[in-house]
Image 1 (cartoon, rainbow, N blue to C red):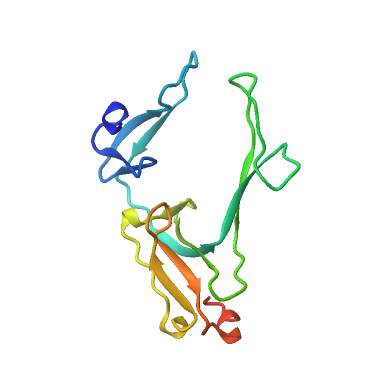
Image 2: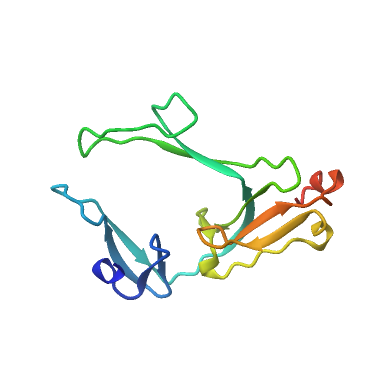
Length: 168
């Protein structure tokens, strides 16, 4: 539970997102860890404003993870032989929209002045809208749960002129 591992001003959202509205530090570890030296991450929230230099909206229809030793396009099994073992995992997000009814999760990322990229989820109050010029071809709905705030769906009115625009 949150109370077992966190103290104010930190809390867990949806059982997986560390959230804070104030400065502070938290040590986060794995529940039930049995290693001699359990891995712990120190998280520090600071009160230094960082300018947002850009917003990126991405529509994702599929995703997968691939490990460095994998010979396929999906995640492979990996058995660690010691605490120093590492494995490189790459996340691949895909966008395949081909016909009416295709849909995907809408993810919004902010690029900050210090070159960090962070996803902006519904928990930070992000609002996404479809430009009036595209409402005949793209429907937007709130996501029922998960990290994505919205889902987009292709409608029958989506035209070639709309898809060739750099704004879609």
